[in-house]
Image (cartoon, rainbow, N blue to C red):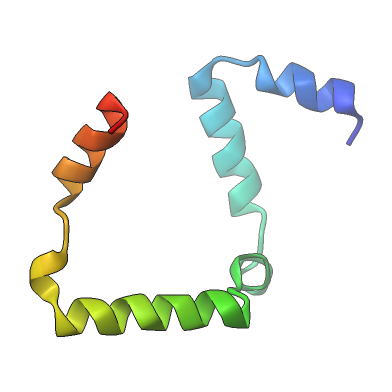
Length: 75
């Protein structure tokens, strides 16, 4: 895709960009989605490590509303 086309698409209002993103997503087959979203072995290992840590110490989890608040205020 030419860079000018992409830069023009990025100027669309948020609603139109979201609509375009959904339309593009829906053109992918299940196999294409799986292939594009596949984790690397390193990513899988990290997910497994984090899950095991959470199972062992669930009290260390941070609620989503607190994470979101911290992201908004830049802590």
